Length: 215
Image (cartoon, rainbow, N blue to C red; front, top):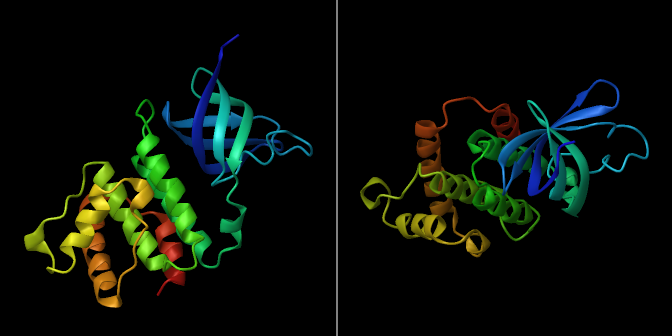
């Protein structure tokens, strides 16, 4: 019998398999992005029922199989149930999950991306921060963490550069400690759109859905 491995992570996606199971994609600190099958989690009373859902964050006990892992147990620290009630914020939340899924790889430490994802979901729940700003900070910081973006002063307005440097250089826990005026926010949107166009080589359905609500 395979040993149980404890991993800390967040559920990026969960899809039904058969009548009682789910296929779950986890981004973890220890193993990177992995596929986990939650057997019987759709059955009433299953201890895995609440754990096998997008946004759920905690410690998961998994057992390695030939091509995937099996979820044995979970100790949840945050369900992010409030995200589901956000309109249209929930669609931005799913977009964040998809971007982490895009960059996630098995066997690569996912700690930095998970920290960013956690504080970004919390920021979506902060009524003092505009969703538009939360989105652009998340995008820019995620690109920077994956070595795909660094601000260049000659390629943006002078007022935008120090904001971009703050986002890319600050730890995840501090990137949402500021607000900006409309002019700077529009500049950040322009910078991020150009950077994403250069780096993301697939169309994310969650982005299209999100942008239907944020026009």
